[in-house]
Length: 112
Length: 115
Image (cartoon, rainbow over all chains, first blue to last red):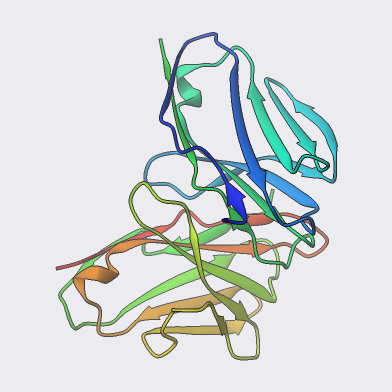
């Protein structure tokens, strides 16, 4: 079993839809959870960062972490065509200087 | 937020030549930087951890003599792909954690094409 599992999609939704992206993991030592957005041929950019369990909201984006289930989610409300990108979950056991473990990435297309 | 730059953004070279890729932290110091490789439609794969003032730590299966890493200063790490071959063609990305921050910042990536 891989440390981090993420459905690679692709996922195609109409503009305005609510998008739900998920990752599961097996390493209970993970404490820091991130979602990155990567546009084609670009480096990943940090979208959301969460420590331990709980919810975090930033504009149209909400990140949820359920450590008991080893399950994290990213919700995108009122999705826009500009949200079309690959979304990668990542996690690490210590903040900052530890190696990140990535999911495979989910390719999302939001159709106008 | 913190900014990490990479140079060049794109390079095309002939098989057998060496290519150097630079990763710079522009507004913060980074004692550690990470180098990733990403093949099309795949996730980032960690190649090595670059440590300022000491040897890099390579992931299993990554040839340290082929992928030379030098972390010469607190703001610069270089990855040199020696004797590049077509199978080395990939997207190379670096990242660095900013001191006092619990997150890592990624460079824009370097696309290498070996003919």
